[in-house]
Amino acid sequence: MAVEVGDIAPDFELKDQHGTPVRLSGFRGDKNVVLVFYPLAFSGVCTGELCQIRDELPTLGGEDVQVLAVSVDSMFALRAWAEQERYEFPLLSDFWPHGGTAQRYGVFDAERGLATRGTFIIDTQGVVRWKVENAIPDARDFGEYRKALAEL
Image (tube, rainbow, N blue to C red; front, side, top):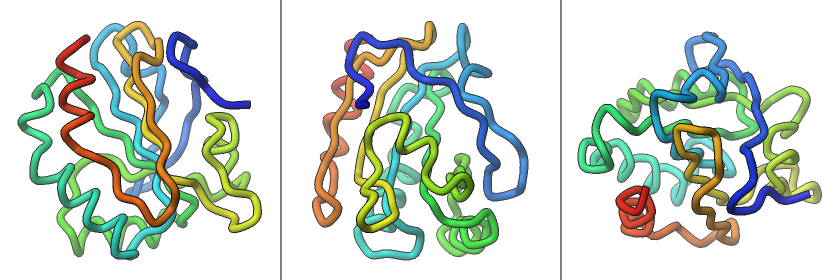
């Protein structure tokens, strides 16, 4: 079942690249969340997208915006990738149950066993205000994130 604009975002808790639990609802009342699902760490399109987020994060809304990036990779793979690429935002491991969070959001490709390129912008009240899902080989348009956040 896909999550749609206007829905309350399903809560989840996943470990980040350092093993620290991160709960979506922990940002309620405080920050808008850009929830970015991506297929796999170390892949070309994913690296490009997350490097763009890393480089342009300060222009997305500053302290009022939290990026959470989610893949089925293990915490250990995410840590190595974050260190290599200098990602400072949380990379969350949806490793087990395998892709469970991506499935709840409707962005899991069961045949391939990984998330598609789904993005959800969630406001401070936990409501999904914008979403996009791209095919696995197709990078997302970063300008659309900025536009959606400006409308909050």
